[in-house]
Image 1 (cartoon, rainbow, N blue to C red):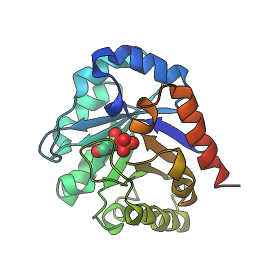
Image 2 (cartoon, rainbow, N blue to C red; image 1 turned 30 degrees about the horizontal axis):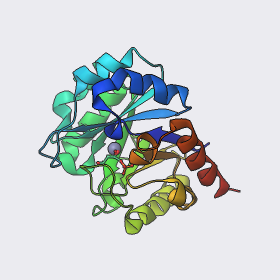
Image 3 (cartoon, rainbow, N blue to C red; image 1 turned 60 degrees about the horizontal axis):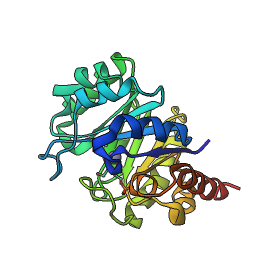
Image 4 (cartoon, rainbow, N blue to C red; image 1 turned 180 degrees about the vertical axis):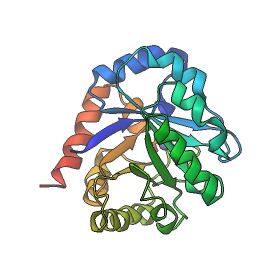
Length: 224
Ligand code: DX5
Ligand code: ZN
């Protein structure tokens, strides 16, 4: 079943607890949390203490997207913050350390995920398919909300889904992140994406529930 994951990046940071409560009530399946360090991406957002503080306001699945250099340094902190899914970028360290970071996520009891940027080949994620529970395909350059979806990046989702289906871990999920809105949700879902992240399209809308419902409806229509 297709899941919709609003990204807190486009929420009102001065009222985070209300935003978490409201987005949960609006029917979001998952809350996507973008952690940026100003090094891996040219922007800084929030870290584990903020996630831990908002954790008590909702039981919704917390999907933590780490856009940080050498994420292995902080896995324990994010496990401790209450993350249910933790994503590390394949580009953020060497293969040995990324693999170890993914192992640490699993040892901590969370789902492990690897992300690739729009310019990174599918093979960079493929080498971790023996360990991950999810692959995050970036459909914009990471760093900022409100950008336009890069179609060529989305096409990689189709390829990765095919590879997953032909392997022994066909349960691995695909998440697409960046530039997703109601008008392109069907195209995203048609690529085999299981989780659609939407930041500005949901938190920028007047009514969160209407925005989520429309994205979901369009995404589901692609599978009929
Ligand atoms: C970008 C983030 C995305 C972002 C998506 O680096 O990873 O999760 O919040 O925002 P929209 O949906 O506005 O492109
Ligand atoms: Zn993200």
